[in-house]
Image 1 (spheres, rainbow, N blue to C red):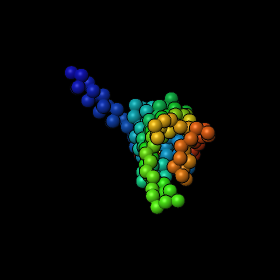
Image 2: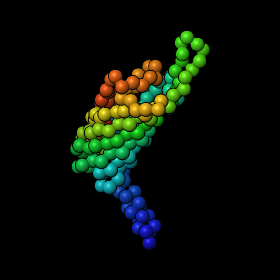
Image 3: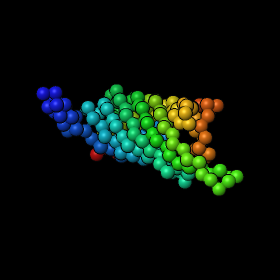
Length: 163
């Protein structure tokens, strides 16, 4: 009986879902580009996103979850979880050092839909990284090094199109 209720709940949520795509400047909840699925009468969003391109990084992407208080137009809180994998060159030797970091961002945003299908958003949050056996507040994107000397609050602005 529990399985039937779970399946019916999932089908009900999926039937009222809508899909969107987005493009942004910055790296907060949405990333640089991605696709988003919104459920529960436009209150819960889940996305897959790509953070951008850098030749030292093999993969820069992840997923995010947001709770939207008033639907697609209005404020929301989010969590974004990203995986960064790559390599940096040791310039003194002909060697590459591999790295794998987990990036976590918690924050809030505001989205406004001009029409049912087109809108803009802005968001900010607090990010930290897990890697090299500890937790850090900053990643130097150029050399792949982590430190706790700097705190960075990512800010993003972007466009969204809902289908």
